[in-house]
Length: 153
Length: 153
Image 1: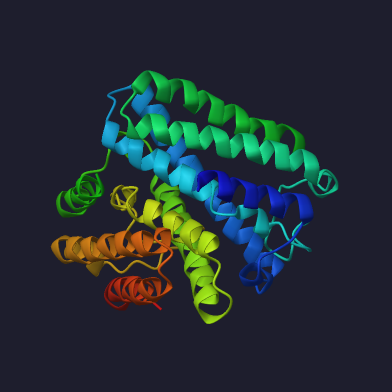
Image 2: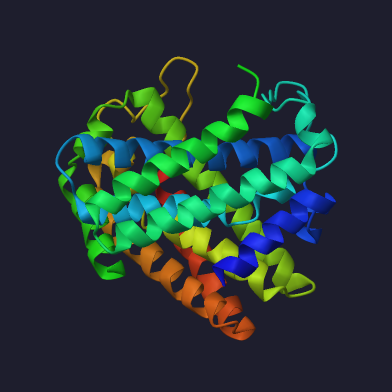
């Protein structure tokens, strides 16, 4: 199932197809919703880091990893529809125009990101702190791979 | 596991205990992160509604339901810490002060919400459209139960 969802995400990125449901959203709404997803993932990345740096609470880490994984595999690619490549009124986006010119590369990066969050969630649900530490680093690298190329400072 | 996470959520609400990780967040950050979670859930509720109203894509519904469920069970109660009961600078919140005076009631509402999202995710992952329709309605009612009492218009 995870593989199917990841494939769908790649398809959305590669082909630029927005789902029917998302096609009804304005560009402002798409930008806001995708930012909400990234923001909520960042909270949970911070929580996992705090656990790795301090007292490790396996339940909290599993909950955080599951949230990251479910958001990453939710189909966020559909929130990068037409008109979302720039600021819209008061809604600012840091995505670079290059993102939309390199969707094949974005699809590879997104696939790596999804795979890393799958591995993080598996490790967290198994209660394996060492493996969580490793896969957490891999998720961070997968985030950074996109930020470095396609997110403005 | 779901039951354990739900219990932790209730514990956080009932006792007002913020996790170590969350205790490091400013009130503004806590408000922003919780709003991100609610916003991302609302996108996914909208997607499920569109699927129920139109062509039903079981993979998309499962992905949306899993995102809602993982966010609902992530421990968002810890994002209602001290100082988050009012606007902070430019960061606005619609939570009513009554929320913080009735944490036992909030815990019951939160427990119902978590149970409803568990049921929605189970139905969605089973590909059972009828049961998704039923449990989707229950999640909506659980959202509304809190909004009616504790969210300003």
